[in-house]
Image 1 (cartoon, one colour):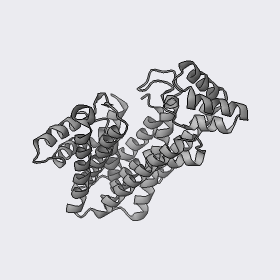
Image 2: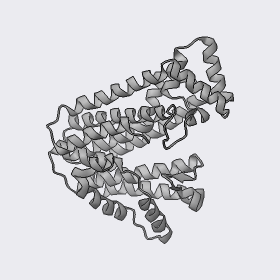
Image 3: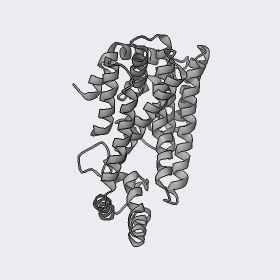
Image 4: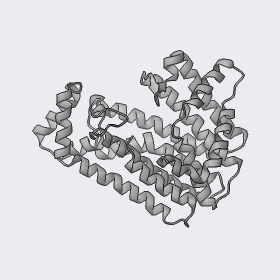
Amino acid sequence: MKPVELIKLPIKKEMELFEKKFKDSMLSKVPLLNRITYYIVRRKGKQMRPMFVFLVAKMVSEGGFDERTYRGASVVELIHTATLVHDDVVDDSNRRRGFFSINALWKNKIAVLVGDFLLSKGLLLSIDNEDFDLLKLISIAVREMSEGELLQIEKARKLDITEDIYFDIIRQKTATLIAACCGIGAASVGASNETVQQMRKFGEYIGIAFQIKDDLFDYTDEKIGKPTGIDIKEQKMTLPLIYTLNNCSKKEKSWIINSVKKYNKDKKRVKEVIAFVKENGGIDYTIAKMNDYKNKALSILETYPDSPYKSSLLQMIDYVVERKV
């Protein structure tokens, strides 16, 4: 059994019911919209976000939850899907999870409108049911995701990202949505504000570890989902590169920056940069940082009694840092 399937076991029934509820939450009177949302449901990924919502809800309530948790998971997926549809337009991307993107099949105008529709469906699902606390948690995440993307664009022009700014960017871009899932899971079962915030922190730590793992893929020789060196080709400043820039001579620093700015399409030069980062401790430092965040997440879970849901969350942490794609 795949790791994700194992993690899902204690909430298998809930996940199956969620799929139906999620599909229903996207229904429209417009046939074109229904065709597109049917396509979106068919190309679903691992569904990590609803899994976080359900596992946290079950763990903090010791096994029980109701419709509010399903709505919380649907809101997360609706709004997350809206941001992905818009991202594909912004990035001019034709593929998503091995399928054609919405903009590739139906063009940009329709894709933007579909994204807007999904966003409004998510908002209304919360408002109609007076789930204002859940809506606030997801709205904070969307605001931070936008700020993180814009901060990255601004800094990428100059390649002057410090480690602090790097962590700001990944906390906002990637970790904030997982933080919202965990916070929503806790809030949906009436947990105290203290528990909701603690679960948000838990999600944030996992999200940061997840993104750092993604950065490491750029330097692996294994066959993975994305080609080695792709971040350098796209002039993305990742942690191994930032650490190396901060810990080498002036001459070496200008060679790296010049390579990333002007020779990022030169395969030989990109390989040389990757080799330099490896030789100068960039990978070891990054792995240590990832494990720091993994341990912070683990220490939060230690405060909860053992349960199948806690076990699955522990497996989720391992999966995040050990996955191959």
